Length: 288
Image (tube, rainbow, N blue to C red; front, side):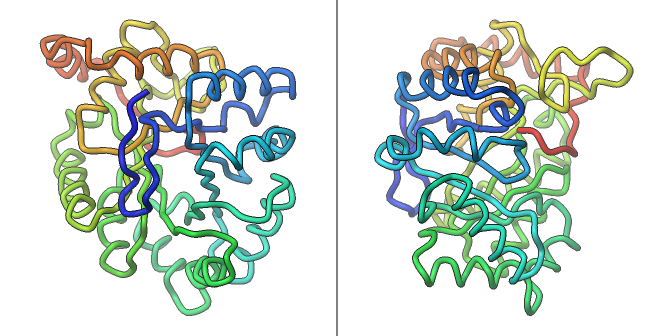
């Protein structure tokens, strides 16, 4: 699988990172099959969070092997120095490791959340302490909402984060305001060599009153043809890696699409973008 530089970290990330939300609500045997698949496909970047159910514990039996092979990112939704510091230690214990490669402020999509994290005594101070003590090498920020790209642009004005993580897909790209904010953020990321993680590649719509047929909080695209085109659409942009969708049944299709994304004709990408008005890609939510 293709790799791309994760900003200035020195790591070449595969264009798919294993988003472990999908293994947080399944048993260990199911999680093992998903982890084995991503390793067989050469995935070298794993993203986990304490809010992803039991994902940290599902990774723990694999940690000796994973630490040799993958770049490990974790996150905190805590907003104070003390609580972020405590949550990092809890994550390290649950994962069965003494360090992560990347620790991120999680779900910072709005300005007031960024204000809380960057205030005196805020979570950012806990991340800085973790880096100083060798518990992580790099620091990042993530967000799920429609304000995330704009908020992350402000975050980069306040602090020199190594990575950002925000939603992008062809439905969102068709929204001119969102597209403008993403383009502005990507330009700064290129200039400052900030690694770019993408989430919500396959977000189609909110469930509404329809029965939930996937583990994701939103309704994902599930047909292989659309998955192929949606993954290809995102990878045509100057991003580093796409976090895989949070349902293990979709994982094989997502990986296959990333392996062959260059084969998707440009005309199909244009047709896909033209279809965006039929969908209402949701913004707010936890599951990648």
